[in-house]
Each structure stands twice: as C-alpha cells, then as structure tokens.
Length: 76
View 1: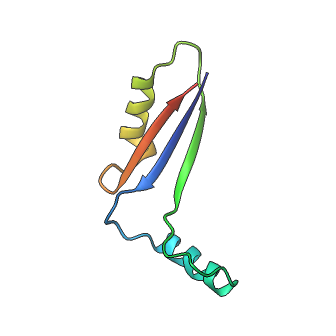
View 2: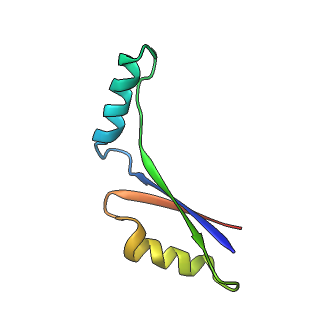
C-alpha cells in the first residue's frame, strides 16, 4: 500500500524558496509568474493494513511542522 503526503507552508507564512524560484523564472524570461509556493511530497510504501490515521500520526509527529505547514494524505 502506498500513501502520498503533500506538505505546504500555511498561507501567510513567508516562503523564501518559492520567492527565489519566482525570481529565477522572471530572470529566465518567464513573465507573469506572480507567486510561487514550494512544498514537498513524501511517498510511503506501507505494509498492508496500514491506516490513514497512522499516516496522519506520522505527519503530526515528524513529517510536517504543523505550526507553519499544512499537509494532506492520499492513500492508495
């Protein structure tokens, strides 16, 4: 079983990496990019019987800094 976790900075939290990407895109001639938010995707290969609740607990304890990041979990 596979779980995909997507972690992004919460709205209102400054994203210096995203801003650097936006700036670099402009320097390369890609006009019209007004904002970039950068996040991470974590794929977990899990044993059969693993639950979304277990993955959520993993996110809360390690995979996401819930003070400044939000996350979503997709099982399948």
